[in-house]
Length: 106
Image (tube, rainbow, N blue to C red):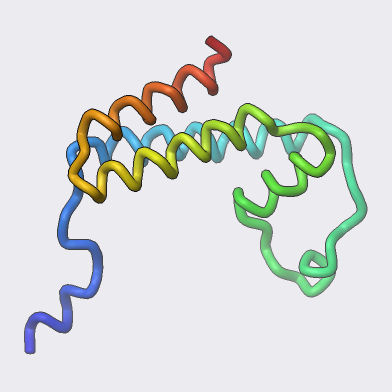
């Protein structure tokens, strides 16, 4: 019954490390933009004392017309994860490179 302990992902793709590193940059960018931009009324979830996630913060930023680069970079990272899981290192590397360009404004 040892196989029951192995419920997590068994395969890390060739660019998993790059994805994880860049995800930290995207999350930091979201936090930075959230702290420096406009504000909006608290959501119902916030009033129920739920902690915001980078995704919920980004959703609020986009609703305010901000956070476009972080949203685009996050979408590129989602494509990178899909390619990585599918065993497509070229597709993964392309999507990671796109996310980097978006974050760095190039």
